[in-house]
Length: 121
Image 1 (cartoon, rainbow, N blue to C red):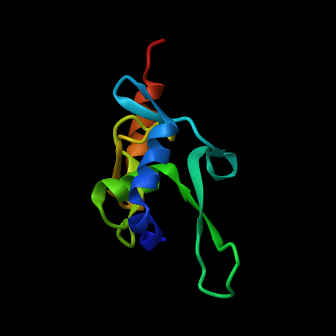
Image 2 (image 1 turned 90 degrees about the vertical axis):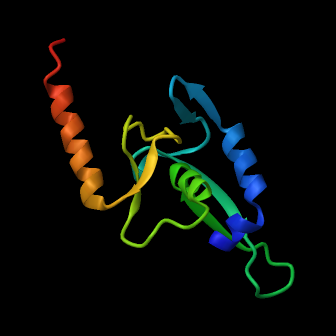
Image 3 (image 1 turned 30 degrees about the vertical axis):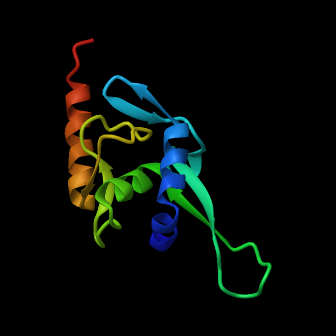
């Protein structure tokens, strides 16, 4: 998958730009959403598979926030890490995404849930 991203980086950047809109500090994904996977933005693309001539290739599905993070880092997400929303916690935000462990990601979610529960309104 990373080879496909490197080969067509400009194409992926254009797709990301075309499917986002600014909302304050966030850049919100407006393209396809995978409701089965928690409501994250998603992209599909076809990767050529070196088998028989004329075959269409393999379809890859990736979270838009994960792709955005990989393009920003210029490398794949490290093993044991995931793309987590560290500031706004909006699943459709493309800007506030960083590499973090599962433990860090869950801890941030718990902390923000507690803050929301203490809201006086």
